[in-house]
Length: 153
Image (cartoon, rainbow, N blue to C red; front, top):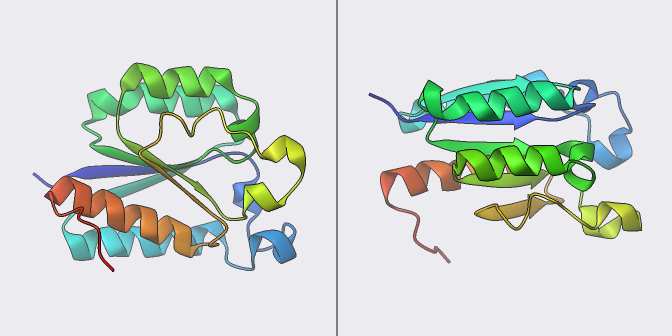
C-alpha cells in the first residue's frame, strides 16, 4: 500500500493568490495542492490536502492522522504557528514526523512571528521559499519514507 502524506494548511491560506501577494505570492492554494498531489503520484505516494481557518478542525485532523494511516505531515500552521499551544500538543500527542512550512520568511517579519510553538517538534522547518517550500518539504517526506533522505549537495 502506498505511503500517505497529509498536507495541512492553516488559517487564511485559502486566500492565497489574492491575500497580500507581495508577501504570499500570486499562486492559489488549489494550484499548490494540485501540484503536491501530482508530485506524490509521481513518487508513488498518496498526498491528501486539508485547509481550515479553525484551530479545532486542524487539531481534529491531526488527532485523526494515526488512525487514517498517515505516515508523514507537511504542515503550514500559518498564524497558529505563533499562538496555538493546543495544535503543538496535538502534534506531540500523535508523534508523527512533520515538516513545518511557511511561504514567507517569518524571521524577516514582525517580531511576534519569530516564535513558533511547532518548530521544536518538527523534523525541519522551511520558510521564505514561497510555494516551492511545500514541494521541498514533500520531497523530503517522500525520501524519508523511502529511506533515501540523505544529504545531497
